[in-house]
Length: 309
Image 1 (cartoon, rainbow, N blue to C red):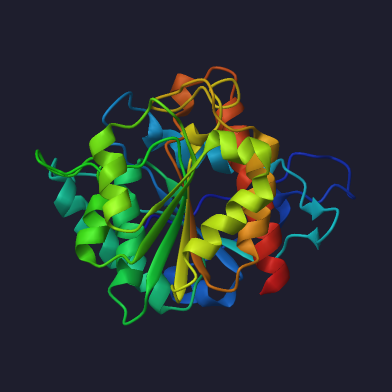
Image 2: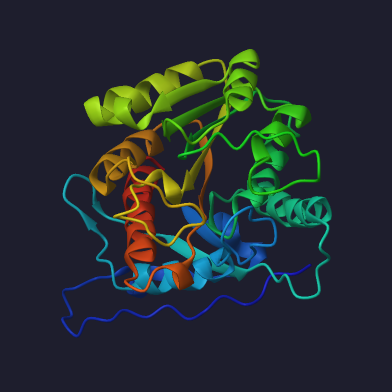
């Protein structure tokens, strides 16, 4: 399994004052990833999706949408010093999801070991295992803040899937999980009970609606014992009106404004070691709303990370 050369980033504006991500994202190699504040790693894979597929096209669609987004944040100024290492190649991989997770984890471990802050562009939620496992394998306490409508802690009785990553990570040694934006009537009682038994935290979309920053602060407080924190964004945390292009869109989700406030805030935590955006399936959204929402989520997150770098 290898990484393909990164695509060429280009801005779309003819105004020389309109600095866009397409103008500032550098193309880089795996050897040089440590020179940047953040590095994109594409993961075009959806072989483990429980519901509707299409997330393998997510990395390309997110890049295209982000290229035309301006770099300026009113509070923090422009985002800069970001690079793209390209996509992991999944050509010829087996149907064995566990084997795919292990192979991808070898690459993501290399990215971390070279001192990079990775932003993984998914791809389906099964690869959260590969994106977090290298951190869990270190001699540190690891927690995850997961922005998701679902808990994704199913027991992989029939093998790993997009619904099993946190069960797998707890088995591997994950210390804490806080799920932000979970929806009522989207999770079975058994999975909610499991997360309660292992000390996880569930914060619903209703709680986000009452006070987004207080909710995400509660999530971070629940990970106070962790040395390292990873942030995962499943696009189905958004209401289906904002993100129809996901495997399981449903009503009652959070808004883009709430999500962006929380991502910018959580990114300022010095323990954050990586970020992923998963389950963006552009073929399921003929309006491009989902990829546009994902692109701006990355921009808001990076404005916090690069400011504090």
